[in-house]
Length: 221
Image 1: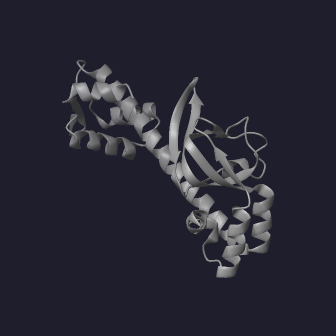
Image 2 (image 1 turned 60 degrees about the horizontal axis):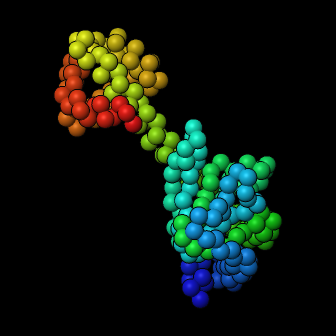
Image 3 (image 1 turned 90 degrees about the vertical axis):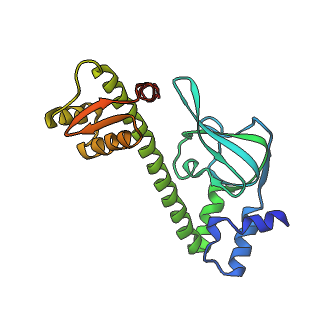
């Protein structure tokens, strides 16, 4: 009964008639797997093409960079994941999903999903909508990470320039934007943000450090 109530939040069900939704729910709940704490649910070397819907528990999503696992996301009850394993993944899944405590998931295999889309076109529309939301989320994450990277680079540059005279002139700004691989408009927004946070002063194209301790912290991110 608990699964029946939770499954109503599955994005694939949006816009379906009561009868069609019931049929889709039966198909989704036909395969339910339980994973124990620390058990890998999905990974590059450990997956079958499937969408998974978290019925109970949590799971961490990590990626390995330079031998270190970096946490990207935490999946919770009601989350749908695994799309990257479908339709031509060729044995390559980009992240590792690991159970945090006992975690139960409904497993929607690729063949099952294809059959549901054939029978109920609205499921296909819902799946495309789900993927579009994922793309927007990933783009936001990329923007955030890129922004942090640029901010760190800028902080390092300011520390290197500290004591050598204030950075000034529009020509230097253009060179700095090029060195940071960012547009001048984005550079100016970042400088204004630093100024508003009391880290620097930025007037007439001249930059001076006000809070060196915080600038040093940012430079190490």
